[in-house]
Length: 177
Image (cartoon, rainbow, N blue to C red; front, side, top):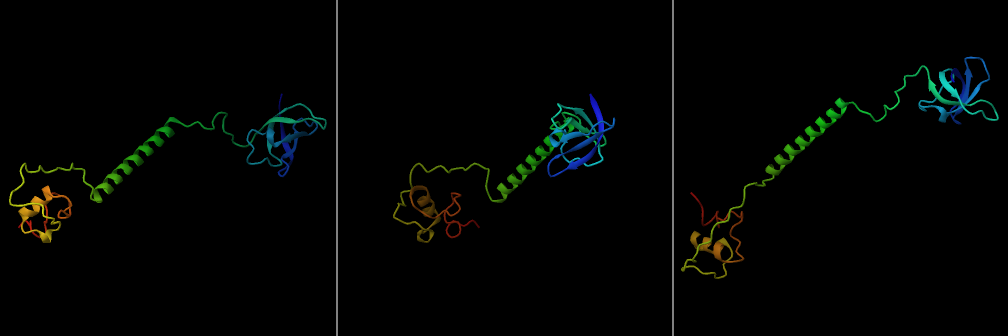
């Protein structure tokens, strides 16, 4: 049977106290484990509902204690979220993902990366008979732009295309005016 009473005495350090029933019967022992909500701790003078549990050798014991004056969350509330809350979380995650994608794309382009495919130039079918690979590797060793283009197309180990665009010696021999 559900009873009502008031916490007459409470010991925070030991986690127990006593309830004085409203019907003026013998006071009832109560342990912190009997409370559905254990925090904040009970205070002397608070009104409670309780059930009498199995009596101990020292007297009656309270079980399933609930506060009368404190606001309590309904059973099963913990962990449940409204559909609006879940929708809002998903929208926030989507917006964050989109912002991340935009920032990543901006950073990728600002670093000079190109998304255009690399186009390779077709090699001439026949090498020009006036040039041959004679060990030249730098632009200052070449005589003309045509020779530089021949070396770039046919001779391994040359260092004459610094920006790898297929145009050799752009700053010296193969300038475009």
